[in-house]
Image 1 (tube, rainbow, N blue to C red):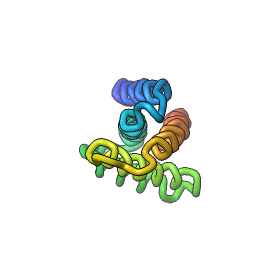
Image 2 (cartoon, rainbow, N blue to C red; image 1 turned 120 degrees about the vertical axis):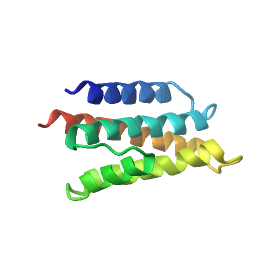
Image 3 (cartoon, rainbow, N blue to C red; image 1 turned 180 degrees about the horizontal axis):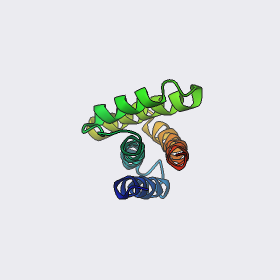
Image 4 (spheres, rainbow, N blue to C red; image 1 turned 45 degrees about the vertical axis):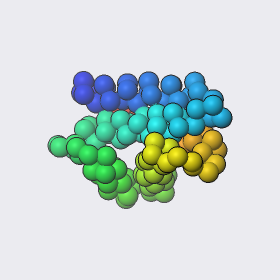
Length: 127
């Protein structure tokens, strides 16, 4: 595996582990933030492995990942949508003073992030 791909995947796992160690009632903003960035780094790893030039912005990574998985079936498309939702939640958690149901939605985002990182690891194992 390319060292840059491996570094992004390792960071994704580390961020996900940090999110999983937190209580959603005590640190929902941190969970939303860490979950999104775990997904972002996993998606970046896939894009580096699959393409000549990885995207340089958050929107670029999200868009490129969505284009990559759009024809791969419902499950991969669902992961692309989860990445979009995670970014939206992260922005709300980071910048919103009060976010309704943040504890619930951040816990759901953390679960999405686990499935997303697992999916990206499977994609990276396929040649």
